[in-house]
Length: 87
Ligand code: SF4
Ligand code: SF4
Image: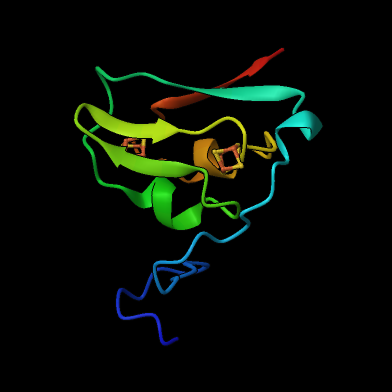
């Protein structure tokens, strides 16, 4: 799919769950969202390779069953609102 936003590295999905596998057991670091910083830009949702993040009432919500702890969301968040915490 063509990237209409011109953002380098942006991966767009057609709405289906990207990974859809229970990779939570792989995780060594867990993403923690700072809701004070988060502006709900939803970029983390677009970048997560496992489709583990969804829109919630108060911002992004991470389903840890699908999160492998890769840290892509933390790296891509423009507000530095996601911190990776060692489990
Ligand atoms: S990328 Fe960062 S600021 Fe944007 S929704 Fe995710 S946590 Fe919030
Ligand atoms: S660390 Fe972030 S980007 Fe990586 S799988 Fe977990 S929620 Fe997705």
